[in-house]
Image (cartoon, rainbow, N blue to C red; front, side, top):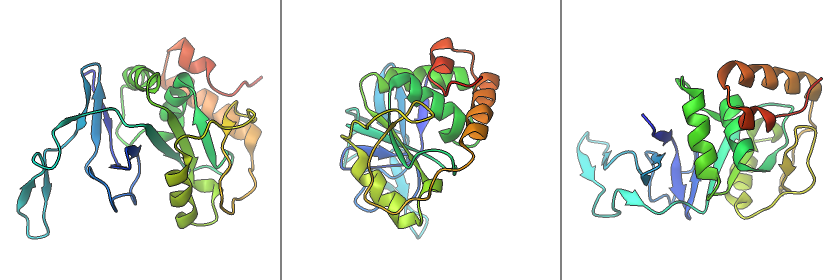
Length: 198
């Protein structure tokens, strides 16, 4: 209760909420955020032979907030990379980036908004890239970017040095996300951060 699990890996002081970022990562088993701070989800790691290695000696459980969090969506309509405001981070977490099994979207949205008020959040859309290697590289390069003019979703789009696909079904996706988030989350600030639909 009151804890936001962030499944993913942390490398270069950036948290990636997706697989494929374990190389060079200090933490590979996820993180947790709450009003009390930021920490690792697990104190140990399982070896190939089934034994457990205590990771505490490498890094204490409680750690400083990362310099950025990168979330991942997979949709043909969304831009390839976006810089998110705190309310947008909560909106897109609820709409497209929450892990399977998330049930209390209001609580998660509050915690994402709180964390994003001090830690920049970004969204990478896997569905916009020609191949997986491109979205991985874009994710590694997005931290620190501010994004340009807002797109049809109100997102500040970040330039990526990769081949991307043109967006499709944007209007349909806007309506679909607005309906989905309204059914999951009742926080006005979060709902207002989504795409404007008629």
